[in-house]
Length: 173
Image (cartoon, rainbow, N blue to C red; front, side, top):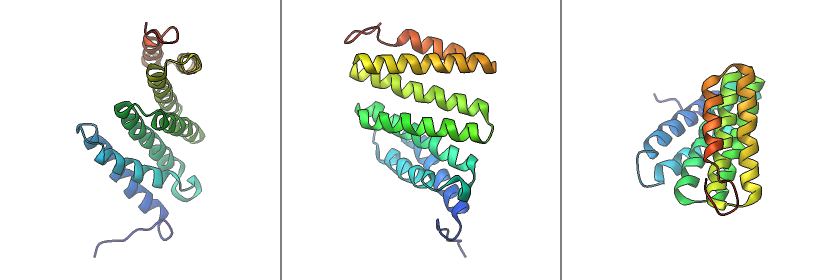
């Protein structure tokens, strides 16, 4: 007999199933032109992320937030939706905090890097001074934090992304 999970009866198993569905849908959706699978990923991952860490564990919640942020970013990048990019940045910020809460410093910095990527994409689309400044600040924060943690790959990545940001409103570098 196939087990039936629900967020009320078995929140961890239900959330794990949603995260697995979301991650698979995200991976497939990244390879397709349609956003259909990406929308499935967003639904599943957002549903899992809404459950409190006290019911599903901090690691699973962090994963749901991180991969949900990736799915929102992919949709926002494809469609030019600033709303989706804002959701991506917000979920990455929450994932950063969730990973930090469970002591996973590396994943916390990776989430922060992805948060900065979302702000960078936003700046590429919007070309507003505030958007550019927010993206620049986000990448500088990643660079400093990664340097302090000895994560040279993320220091270099943040440096490259800083160079690619627009330097002024309406003009790309």
